Length: 224
Image (cartoon, rainbow, N blue to C red; front, side, top):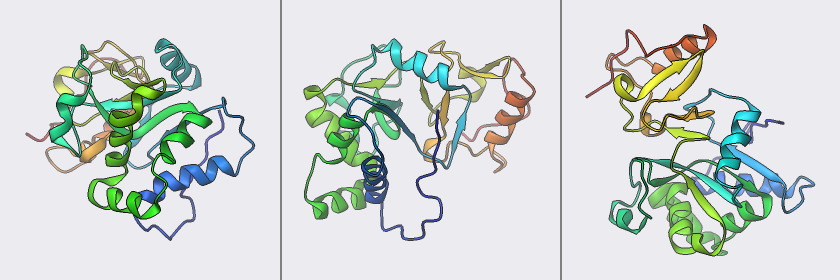
């Protein structure tokens, strides 16, 4: 798997629309076929707890959809659309735009859904890029084979996750003790990495991974 930092060296950030357009620019600047699979993840606040085979295994478990998007516990940024999401059997019901994997064609279709750049800027200004992707999923998602990772098989969004009850490790691999999955990508969205004493829990998790430890997190308290 080839990994690239799309923002490396850039100093011209103009808003959350730049994340969407940066992905588009990167795809169009490569020789991808329409059905080539691409994965995007946020960089800040993200840990990898698995490898390439783990990612593809989780993706294939959803029957290799055109687009698989991360899911979280919170209907952000639009609380009023929570009931518009399909019912699922986990707490991870709501879309999170910090991670997705799918075909080049499906990703470009999502990003190009609204052609008016000014409209995209306004959505991203008031609701971030997640607001744009949420609207796409709820208003257009049924058109294509678009799914949310509601069982955290690839992505685990950490907002609202209780470290003492839901987090475990098995030989260095992160384990979601509720979904019983081992997601490869941990996304600490919404500042979910802060401990009660204002340290970063990601450091404790990295240590657990590097030591190939098992069991729960010890010595870190989560804010109330």
